Structures are given as C-alpha cells and as structure tokens.
Length: 101
Image (cartoon, rainbow, N blue to C red; front, side, top):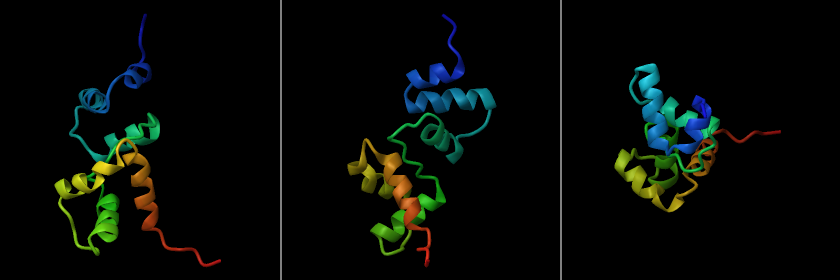
C-alpha cells in the first residue's frame, strides 16, 4: 500500500511530523511547523513556545506582562495537556482588542 504524505503524517507523533517536514524542505524548525500541526493536522496538544504572540499572552495573563523564559512557559502549560493547542488559541484571542459595537 502506498502512503501519501498526509496519510503518513496522521499516523505519526508531532516530533516525527516536524522532522519529516524539515527533511523535505531542508530548513530549521520554526513556528510554522507547529502551526502546520495545529491547523492542518488538527493536533490538540501543540504548544508553540517560540511564537511571540503566545509568549506575550502568557506573560500578560500569568506574570503581569513580564517576559517569561520558554521553560517557564512550558511549566505553566503542563496542566493544559492534552489541549495546549486550544489554550494557545484562547491566549492569542486574549491579545485582541475588545470590539466596541
């Protein structure tokens, strides 16, 4: 049976998908790889700690706006598993201004 790239990626864990994509495009890991997992493969437990929006939102919501290290963000996000993608979406949304209709 011949497996296509999307079929294979559905059967693999997140790190293997990123590794396979990096080999295909010969580039370094970036936030776009995590976005691929979240928005294309609909993985529920992705935490894009290199994403500036996520980092700003976590700092604002959990540390009075003071920047946090990546390890501190990971520690804060541990209880969110296995829904860290969903938490990320809510945190991004928390940065949007409130519409005044």
